[in-house]
Image (cartoon, rainbow, N blue to C red; front, side, top):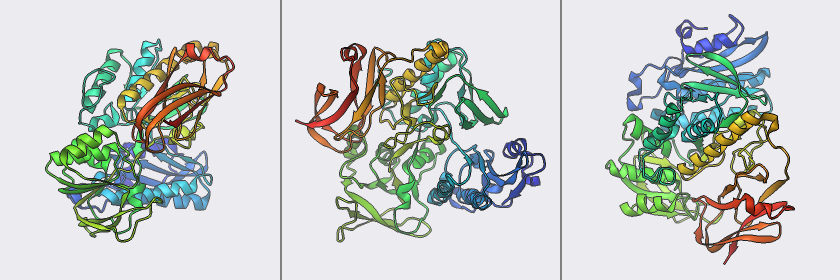
Length: 552
């Protein structure tokens, strides 16, 4: 190992993992090359990641270990290229890649340079899938995780541990400084940090232990958790029950599908939100937003508050992906135009963004010639959706729903692995954090019951299958065991298009039992139906509950 990295936590993790003296570092002299946001004044030895190879019990492995002491371990251009290089070597040798992750996400200061580089090494990971073994993962808690822990404690679970990768509890809620949280849960309007603080206070009041700066690397089917932290190093924790509450991340693909250069000034909406609300950086003055997800809509208002001119919000789909209230409160109230069925077809500028070209698209998402519009701007925000953070879940063998990209769960929010539960945005992306907390409470209570009862927990009872069709994309849960369900069960789902003057209907086999009229349903807002145990017990032979949208 190089002398420059021999004493920091990142290198110590490698030393503890590999056979003594076997590690050979690659790229030890690489540093960041970005200059935006005075980056040239910041030291970035190894660009925040140590890469190389060594042996474990005599077997060749390639390894990368992120160094949180260097720019919080964030992934920058050279950082990502070093990891991609390790993957190339590992695939040539047929050797495993082990990632020791201690990372605050993408390096915000490098904008799309970091995003593009991340895409390159994410591509390497995808190409390596099924070719070489990989141990790479991201695990963290948010409001959902805190709520789950509190519910488990109240339900009688005594030995609880919260593992949090960040330096504070609360997750992404801490950068959501706008209000609108807590109306359902606390019957008052709170900001994101205030909402998270309520659960943090409850966790501390209940004396639930938690570990910060702790990264879960792997969970196996026996519920053994491999976790690394600055204080404890690498350790193995055996659990009786696990609640997955890792949240979600932004989709990067929106940046990769636009022709043109990648100048400074292009950010994901969440990155811009963190830069402004946590780091205190104003990212631009003339803004175009691509995508109408809720974070993008909220950032349109946020940047307007700070004096920026948001010229337009463009959405590829013929409908918005955000809540109706956010369209009204964040766009309409500030005369910010929303252009549906439009996308960015060109980017102007090499060093700094100078402008974009917007064009209307047809029903297949293809730009229509002659509809181009030019907008001068120094900032482009990408709000192209969120995806559950499930690398750990897939690695331990959890069955995944291809529609939600989250785990398949039953009425108890339990996965196919007994004693492993999932809740919140890692399960399916929510529009309201209150519903995240509600799901987390359900997962916590059921996890506590599993721990208390063990093999005595009721396992019999017939399983009822949920069948989403005709406009309904999925349901959570996907199956229901009436004997194990609570007295009341909320089934949540999203639709695949905009439906006006319609009914949300549920059929118990061939009998229509629920038929609720709605003036409009849209993909941006989560829908739900309520089922009761008493109701289901009236149908002892019930096999399938079909949920669909019907015309009025």
